Amino acid sequence: MRDRRRDRTQAAKPLRKRAPRRQSNRVKVEDVAQAAGVSGATVSRALNNAGFVSAEILRRVREAADRLGYVPHGAARALASQRSRAIGAIVPTLENTNFAIGAEAVQRRILQAGYNLLVASTGYEPSRELLHVQEFAAHGVDGIMLVGTHRDPAVVQFLKSRKIPYVATWVLADDDTPSVGFDNAAAARRLASHLLDLGHRQIGVIAGLSRNNDRAAARLEGIRQALAERDLALPQELLIERPYRIVEGQFAMRALMATSPRPTAVICGNDQLAFGALLECGRQGILVPRGVSVAGFDDLEFASQIRPSLTTLHVPAEEIGLRAAEYLLARIENRPVASQTEVPVNLIIRESTAPPPTPQPMSEPRSANESRPASRETALSTE
Image (cartoon, rainbow, N blue to C red):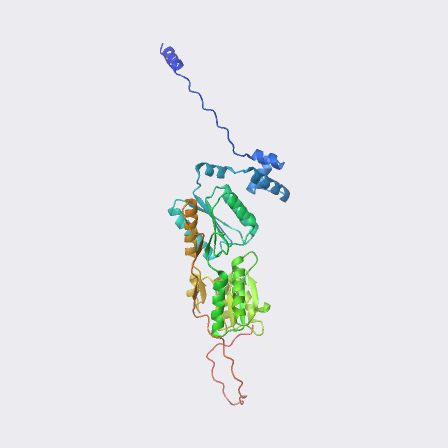
């Protein structure tokens, strides 16, 4: 009886109709595959960098995806909620201390606003920057911090087409590119002028690799401008470009000290190269700054602790990161914000620079019995 009543009660309840499933307008992998004339598996490999895909197939797949407005699943979920709560930072290398300080400052600020940070490095390869931007977009990032302004135009086109806010850092753009940084050429010109004011005329340069690095190229141009203002030039034999590593600074300084006449001062593209130059001077027994002056760029923490302490330009990496984060958060939240922010770069004069050695006047030959005064300096090595 109870079972019968239960059956009748259940039968009396009105059946709820299942709501019809909404038709999705989202472009699927299959749509991209059909448009590109390939399989769905090939589309997945091409867009996720998972396996070999020929350059021609990769081009067709990406063109089809862009034309159809295909958005991978991660980005689709972000679009549905309007926020991913993530910001990307793409830097040339994670070996550079200042880039690490800047990224840390970005993370600290955006965490306060409830965002996470995604970080990638390009190894100074423009093609990798475009891939990282596309990958970040696939994860639905809300904004991206970049370094420098010279890049593949496809990067900017991609970001603008998807309305992803971005900001270039460590530079001050001369167009409408959003930027937080400084004029690298003007800063390097100030450093070179300091050495010229001390009386140096034979100046060598250990620069960073200027290919695919607009900051290194601008610093080199600034040095040339300062020399040109004094009717001087930078001889090719006194210019060496090296990766930003201490050991590379050692090798470059060794080469410069082997030239004749050798430079009385050396400007380094960053402090890591300058640390290497100082180490090489120590290895050769060359006194700094009496034998040669050495200057750097960045003012890393070790610059004030090494002996002799390093004359350099102080770059406020933490401030660059904080201001870049503020710009992106303002854009994400539709708040007004200046498109360009200049940070101060100060010349820090320390022990490693001084006037050039004064040429000693010719003297009469000494007699065999005449004793020589004891030298107060270590003789320069000829290694």
